[in-house]
Amino acid sequence: MHVPLPRQPAVANRAAAAHAAAPLHLLGVAREELRAWLAAAGHDAYRADQILSWIYRRQTTNFDDMTDLSKGLRAWLTERAAVLRSTVLRESASADGTRKLLLGWPDGASVETVWIPAGDRNTVCVSSQVGCPVGCRFCASGLEGVERNLTAGEIVEQAVRIGRLVAAGSAGPPVPLAGGITPADRGIGRGAPSDPEVRRYAHRLSNIVLMGMGEPLANYREVVQAIRILNAPWGLGVGARKITLSTVGLPKQIRQLAREGLQINLALSLHAPDEQLRRELIPWARGIKLADLLEACGYYFQQTGREVTLEYVLLAGVNDLPRHAQALAHIAKRLRANVNLLRYNAVAGLPYARPTAQAAHRFQAALRRRGVNAHIRPSRGTDVQAACGQLRRQAVTSA
Image (cartoon, rainbow, N blue to C red; front, side):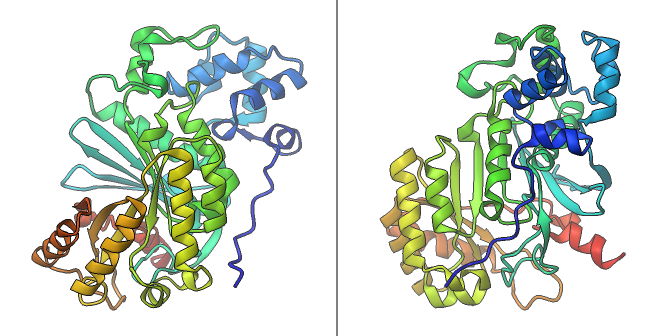
């Protein structure tokens, strides 16, 4: 059975598209694309390096503040390009430090993104689509379906928005960027910022997880473009092994991702260890054979050397029984995969219950007895209803 994918936005050539439709969203443009765009308009290509340095190192969003650019170029950019395109519609702060933003886009669409601080780590959870096409029975994100894909720039902008919050509200030692270097070790192009200016921002985000709203692999092209920008030394500079893509599982796209040359982590949202139960919990999975999916995950490990993580939301009395632990252990050992267990966060109107902590630990122990590396992932931000998709769902239903 063919699994239809949401229609892709027409953004294959962002530099060319910019001449037809302004403004160009700079956060979705690769360095070479930006150089080509500037050169085509008669500007020096090296100015791209300066612009990107201002955006990602100094957190500058106003072209007038980019003082090493000529006034003419600054005026030209103001007319034809933009750094941030979203508006913060709502911000929620949890007692545990988690902060969640609801971002609105010019077309009226909205998505959520989350900052999860933990010690010296600052993780940002980003969305890849407006809504979600998967329709997991226990998740709020897909209750209204999927409206559209996010562009690469809209995905990157979520991380940039959170990065600005992190830089303003936290401190800590520099985290090495891609390649093991620290921000202070590197200047980018002409007019690169000095060491203190670089340190002010670039060390702040330590991890990026594509675990927000949407199915990342159903928006493949834009997600991969965003990952390259998030990872690039001229971009956010987050190491590939600090970036995790979570997917319900599209075998063809998983295999394609394995050949992209990226060293990112792959997390499979499994949630059930057998075909029948998985199809009940994840309607989209009805067209995907579990055997094909597991083979694709094995291929990803073979090609990248990166172990796949299995994500498993525990639903009381549904998928947390001893037989489920036994079947899950078999899959995990076959893939040499780690398992992340998450106790269900209740969503109003959905017929599922959160298992007790004792039940979750019994399930974990059953996996460990069978030689599986299993962890219980703590829930964060529950006091502000920060479970996946809840913030946007409230905004939609209260409108």
